[in-house]
Image (cartoon, rainbow, N blue to C red):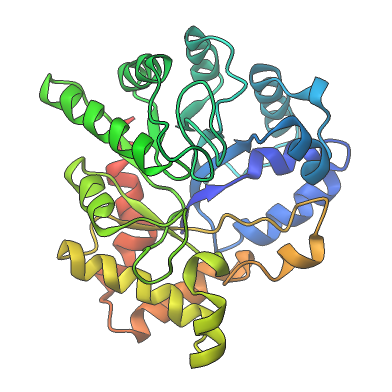
Length: 318
């Protein structure tokens, strides 16, 4: 299974002094389960980084953090050689200059979230100013990302920034460029009204640019608490509803993928995040495969959702 969004690089950085724990965790998640995906460094505000991840403000440096994590991975053989993955950066608040994209590209980054939930110098986040779209600097950044063939992850943008990126990428495509856009961990807003989920028009726009949507196994994105209690619906069934909805909306499964967004590594609220995900990360592939087949998806469709779509629409285009 390809995991479109796992903050694995942040997990390694947080546990850089306890690699024994990292190796133990990785043995579980990679064994007949996750065979690749997008592994991210995750950035929030300095306050959130300190309180939620235990990372001090003076440690926050995208380039140095990437170098350190890269070194840990290769010197300690943390990720098996058969895993097909790319690096991502979630939240570019700390990218000082656009030309620094060249440096992080050289360190393996092939996917970025321009914003996280907050607004930054490039655009508006899902919990920020709804009227704030791409800034002038943000437009420069998008053009550079397209030229570098770095995939643009639309999860966490507000609607204005989302549509500004889509409009700009559509124009760049018409001019002969090859933008790569996708939403790594966002579900269907019509099923579960959440600021991080997508409306029908957004889903269609992603398809028009040949992107994919990673249906994320996070409970609040799958079903509202009121419905969960009223209908006694199982979280895994709610997860499948999102996949079925996009399949029916788009007329097939070619733009659907999956993601875990596992957050059990958090230093704070561990008890909360332990029960945050729909699937246990170490067995998501097996459980989801069985669930898709049980719900009438063909083996070919299941293969597309779990593997092929990510490979064809992101990996092969980088």
